[in-house]
Image (cartoon, rainbow over all chains, first blue to last red; front, side):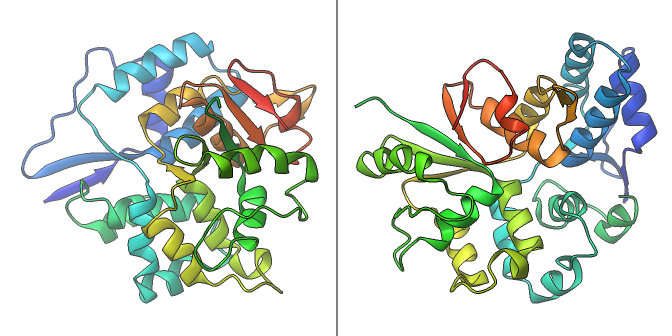
Length: 125
Length: 156
């Protein structure tokens, strides 16, 4: 099973230029994921750069959310599972790691909608 | 009594947690970030907690866990306390997820206010408050956030 996290540059491109009718084909052997926190980070970059009007950003974001890509949200249940997992806590809750990256890892490791090689997905953060 | 929704950022949430009793009943006491002027709002929620709520983001708890030893040093708060709060939130608390609604609201949060940058973590809190699409009081001591003007949002 091939699972990939949409790279930042691709996300930027989609949010700036729109998807241009591109649909993500998620099949039994290939999944494309995106984390909500990763998308928020991309929005932040584009807003700070003044890359486009907020209305354009909103429109492209709407299309992106309907593109078929699997979005990995973060809610309290993922965090609860992390707190039940001493190995995770030891590895990921040091000050060396920022809360955005921790949130992304949580979204991947504990989200029930994330399949495939999670270690590989974490490397792609 | 009208329903009240009060969004709290990470620092204010930390002070609320510090002031909780063993049953996690809302028992607000002024602290470093929980200012005296915020107490009347929280006490009104306590009186009507079936319908009025303290709201925060799941991201708040990621920040609290990330800096647990700094934030909760010299207190009796344990990681088990945070776990219990999230596993079974008390009636007065709503923990909002980071999801598509957060992303959409994030587009409405300014990056600067009066020349000062709004940090990304603060912007996530604002977006989470906005995603309820309801009037909400925002409790924070952050001087930059308090200058933001957005529909449905009132800072205290």
